[in-house]
Image (cartoon, rainbow, N blue to C red; front, side, top):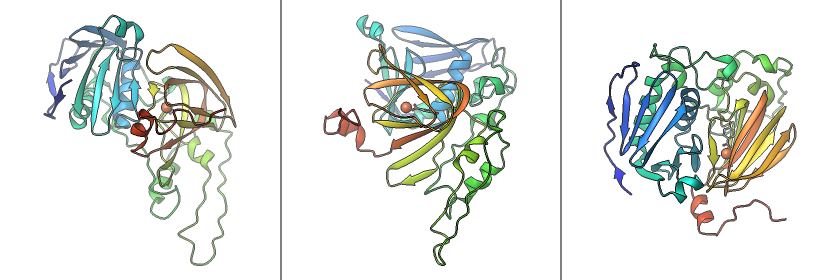
Length: 328
Ligand code: PHB
Ligand code: FE
C-alpha cells in the first residue's frame, strides 16, 4: 500500500468529449457522453455517468462519510479520517477470488481535491447530482457549461439544535426554499415556545416536517441537532440512494413519512442478506457489518441517527463494541 502526499490534481485534457481526464495514484478516470471509465493496474470498470456523478457528489459533500462509500459493486472509498482508500473490487467476492481487486491509500486532501475538481468538470450546466431524477435534466453528452453552484452546495449542519441561538441561519436558509411538490400536504405551522424569563436562548422548538418539506436535495442528510456525539441527520429521499453504504458503526433509521425499501447485503462480499421495508413510524438499526442501499418511490422523510464518536471504528474492529445494537 502506498500513500500519496502531493495534493495537486493530476489532470489532462480536454478529451474529445470536452472533459478533463484525471489520474489519482494508479487509478485513472475518463468521461465520455454516457459513462465514467475507471482504470487501475489490474482492471477497468464503466459506470453510467448519472450514477457516477450522484455517487461522487455524495462522497464529496460528506467528505468520504462514515466507513465505506460504494459507488456500485466495484468502485468506492473507505474513510480512515485523515486518509482515504480508493478501491476497485475490494468488497466484491468475485474480484477478491480472482485476486484482481485493487486498493490505494491517499491523504484526504489529495483525493478530495481530485474528486471535487472532477465533479465540477464533469457536471454540465443542466444536471444537478443532488436533485431527484424528476427534478433535474440529464447529464449526457459532450461538455456543456458547468453547475458549480449546485455541486459545491454546503451540507446544512447545526452546532446544537436548529432554532437555538447561534443556529438561526439554518432556519432562514430553510424558509428560503419552496415546499417540494411531493410535500404540499405537510402542515407548516410552527410550535409556540413559552420560555421562562432568562431561558429564552436555551429553549427552542421547530416543525421538522415543515423544515424537511422544503428540502431541494435528495439523499443528503443535514445535521439538525448535536448532543455530544449524537447527530440527528434527517433527509428527504426520492429514487435510489446513489451510494451503497458500508458503515463502520451501527446507525439508526426512523422513517418519518411514506416508505423506503432497504437492500441489505454483507459488507465484505455483497451477498444479499435482508430486505427491510420501512413505513412511516418504523425504526430500524443497520448493523456495522453490512452494506445498505435505499429505494424510495415517493419522496419521503427519513431520520438518520449517527453516533459520531471517533473511537467507534477501532472499538468495533477490536471487538470491544458490538456490531449489533441489540442482542435478541
Ligand atoms: C446511509 O447511508 O445510511 C444514508 C445516506 C444518505 C441518506 C440516507 C441514508 O440520505
Ligand atoms: Fe448508512
